[in-house]
Image 1 (spheres, rainbow, N blue to C red):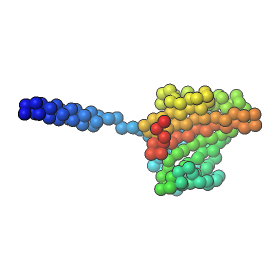
Image 2 (cartoon, one colour):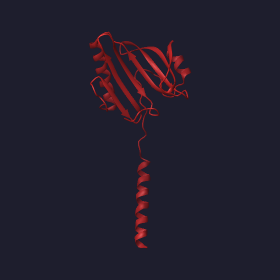
Image 3 (spheres, rainbow, N blue to C red):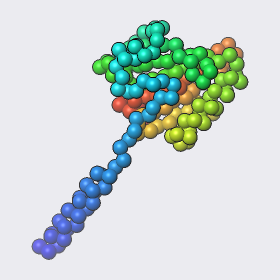
Image 4 (tube, helix red, strand yellow):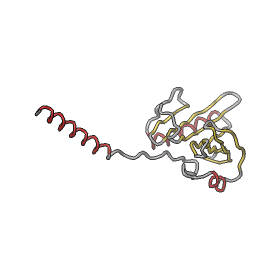
Length: 167
């Protein structure tokens, strides 16, 4: 009987400690996009009102729509993508551009990579040096380039944690 009480007391103490510690968990902060003032809570109507002329609408990977707008960022003309799911929730924001040269592409990649690393730490995935992914509790950040003789492109993508792959 005494042994049962001790085990029960020990289990209750462990449960109490676990519950106390779980209440201290730090809230994750959603990743914020540096290339737009739009936040994850904005509606499509708010985005359209503040983003200028809509260039194109496409189907999205999340069974919703993607809305494309012209956007200059870091001295480069480009396109910002606001990507919605089937419930009309904003789940991804991306900015892409096509620099004129491999040198411009590399410099832009290095600048963005450095800024993201400063804020979120070392990237979790960097297979070839010009493609990186940061997996965070607040969403994923994907930075990648394409550099061929005839085509050069960079895209910076922020993905909401509700749809982000964990690794």
